[in-house]
Amino acid sequence: MGLEVIRAGLQSSVQDQGRFGYVHFGVSASGAADNFAFRIGNILVGNPKQSAGIEMTIIGDKYRFKSDAYIALTGSEFEAELDKISIPFWQGWSIKKGQILDIRSTKTGSRCYLCVAGGINVEDVMGAKTTHLTSGIGGIHGRILKKFDELNFGILDNSINPLERLSESITTDNKIIRVTKGIHWWWFHKKQKNKFFQHQYRVTDLSNRMGLRLLGNAINNKKESEIITAGIPLGAVQIPGDGQPIISFVEHQTTGGYPIIANVISADLRKVGQLKPGDHFQFELTSFSTAEKLKVDQEKFIHSLHHD
Image (cartoon, rainbow, N blue to C red; front, side):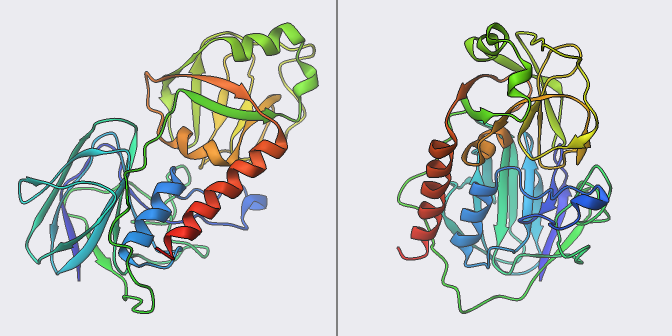
């Protein structure tokens, strides 16, 4: 039971919820870049939340199914056809052995997800199936998918019923990324902090799952541009010597030496995962209490899907 890659996309990899507990060894959690969309995909096909799927970036893959399957596509909508007939996202689809699923270019954001009932069955590495491309572990030999790769499906969990479809598609507005004050917030003059929020930043080509390098207003701080090496959380917005922000992302380095002006709130990390080179957005400051509420609301929505 499984599928074969007959055309590899730009950067596709096996992902799950992430590999936790190894930050002190220098290995960040990784996992799906838009974890919100990925979790919904697993709900649509009736998988446990820790099941692995395939993340595609900007240009998708073409697959031949070697067995019957039940799938869902979520995330940013890509051009997708099953045996040359367009299929929509955010709902379950029955696939017959021999059918071909062709996922081409994105229509909107950066990443989409293919979830399959039973999950993608690859070997666990340090407790997870997720691919950490930076260190080359997990997934298929720690790398992106290639033509002729064959992926097997896991065992179905018949105790979980598929959702089949959402009442409406999930859209993502990436024009605003909300942040809270970072650990080095007070290192920056008021004028510099205002500059940080007043104008848009552009995502540069030097962006990937490790981090997003931005171009826009250069930000200077009161002190030196480097600090004593310290831990870096997911979503930290660092200001290096050139003043152009860097958002640490799912494969971020676990320590670093640049001051952190802000942190992307948990509820908006999915937006970061859908940004692609050339996109423009603006940071917006929010309170910790608002950030917590937005995350709780997101979790309530996920939980509600199990009871529809």
